[in-house]
View 1: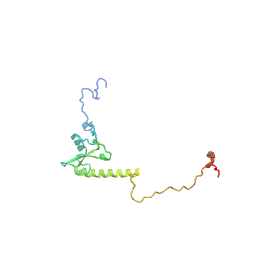
View 2: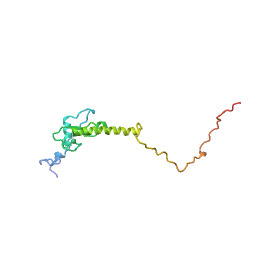
View 3: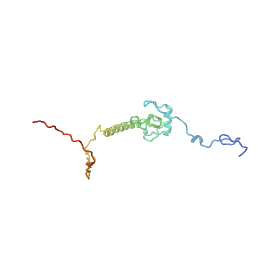
View 4: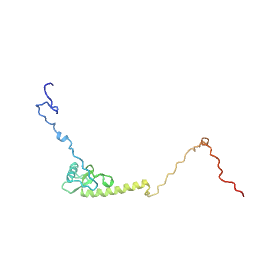
Length: 162
Ligand SMILES: [Zn+2]
């Protein structure tokens, strides 16, 4: 292909450079994820809008469309359960659904705390769980005493004149 100069896009000069169809849709929008400065930081309206759009306007808890009802951004993994205050952990939810979930999250937290306490022995499980005890060994392993160096004889008592 001598004689025809190529543009940077690989299209010979003089030809119209038409972007491939649907390219605009394929190209990912480089939008930086919103991350709250702290757990109390409220997501700004644009983030609310993005989350709403991402969820296609549906409540992420009950799955029903939000429509014109009031809604809130919910932390998918509750902050109290180690979730992060960032866009990827936020989803829209009906106010009532949100409240129900928050109550559930609190219970989950209590459950986790209880389980953790059980593991550390901070609290004991109710009921009578009995220890299995040590397994009885079938064979008694004999210690080869010849391998142990002899101890110096040291009298434990001194003779006392009576
Ligand atoms: Zn809902």
